[in-house]
Length: 503
Ligand code: ZN
Image (cartoon, rainbow, N blue to C red; front, side, top):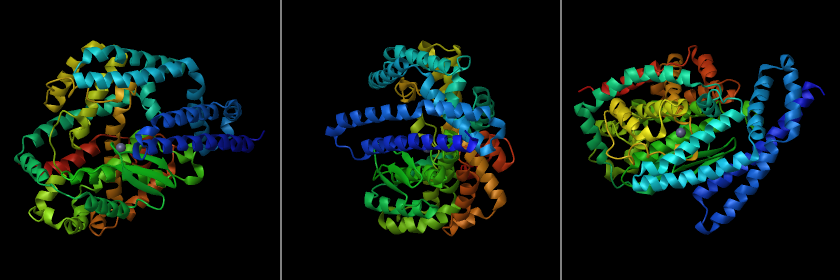
């Protein structure tokens, strides 16, 4: 068989597996947006049947044969073809090297873990949850072993979300970030402006949902989300799913916190723009999938923070915001509104954190996860270690485990190694931002005219259209000419908040 024939065969099988995966995503979206409570059992049966079909498609022995043939001819493949083969190999190994009974036991453990966590959180009972967490760690390590990564299970966990990422790289980046960020957070929290920003944010009350919906639709369309190839609905927790010509975003509304729906929608729009910008003809292969969760998060953070919290952005949108909500905004001067948009306050809870302190919440989780995997930290000692880290990093100590180690769902079903993507995404986003500014210094003037097309076009060409040809670390080097570094994020936070919060 020629390489071209083998690649054509491989691509066809990958595309079929991808189509099934998108059906699964659609079922998941529907479950969170539309499903009546009485439909839960039927949906579970649908998803189980689909998961079986997906597993069969992803572990099809023909995939293994074609991959073997192509890997034998590696030197004759183009760079793109190698990327397709390497990514397909990752997925195929995961689909075939985990024993079926292990996969089943892990799924059951994940479900038990979730419920145990929910109970433990409600009762503030870490001791009741500890055995589950120990078991989850054991499962994660066994899984790494099956995939040949038993010697470095935490690297394997990171690599699952961001191909090629290692704990050593994350540690180097986070150590540098921490050094600069901890003092900046202390500075901001101690500034008189922090209190004013809090008060300004608290004044934003009574914004009708219909108006919020109208405004966020205008914002998200203007920055480039294509509503002929996507939509936005309401769910309990905002998310973005789907890809190519069918991207589904969600948000949630609170009349007394209008900026929440707005910024979470802009965040999801950043994810959605990435998915809409992937080359549709390549969906299912490495050329048509994102470069990992960190790069995905960089797109949401860049639009949410660098763009939508900028002065230029609000020069254009503030009159519109006031136009939709004349009564609610009448008593709020312009500078107060801008402060409310950029309110910073250390909090114990990650999901409520502002964009400055958020990063420290992630550093904390990474450091503990890494120690759990290396054995340096025992599960039973986790609550005390959490409290100490929270004190060091955030300057805050949780009065209980509910607002400490029990706050996040992630570890309960074995989702380790995911947290760092959020902070790496912030670093990538800031580094992309400064590269864009170098190339187009008047970017904020564009925004002030309501023109976001240059930035989106640049991201389309340099990030979105690249698919997974490169890892996030390789891609950032190619686009910006430099290795990933936290200094761009620190510079951005200092420029925005250092100026705004100078006491
Ligand atoms: Zn996100």
